Length: 187
Image 1 (tube, one colour):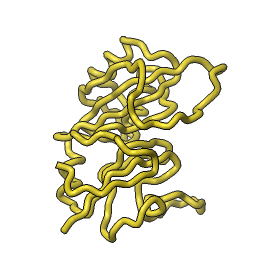
Image 2: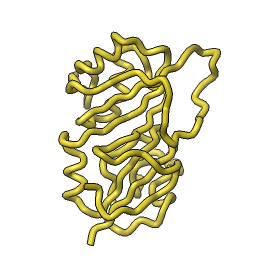
Image 3: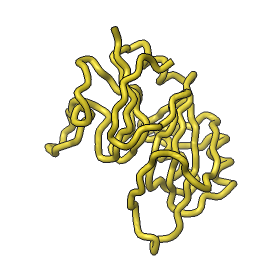
Image 4: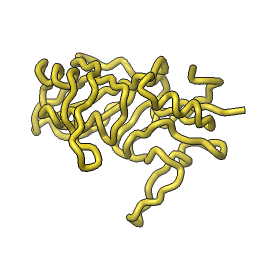
């Protein structure tokens, strides 16, 4: 019997249970948030600075399906500056980013500017207002290259200050930061 979990990963945590990095620092791991069963794995990853919806499962086939291009992943991105309609259009059409030392053009995706946010996203200080304006955008992708969304916003001139995954397929971020909810299935 497989088990499935929905988690609101806070920033500062790695999307893994064991840290095998080269640096001898104390990294925060998912196991500190909940007592997950043996064999649990994160479906996709959110980098240490990112936050939001993360699915965990003990079912490898489920993980493979959700990571596939058949399932959309939506992110809210706080960027440096007021993102323009031209930048949104470029992101929608696909932009060139670097992946493992090679140039890669992202697949077409959905993107839009956001006026407000209606999700359980806690206010978090990312920098002082004196450094200029910030704006939020929504970017929905079906692929997941290393730090892809951050690279996409930077490629159009708007570096990411904060990244929050709010949706995977039909599963939406609905729980508070650092909370865990066990579900029967993701489908």
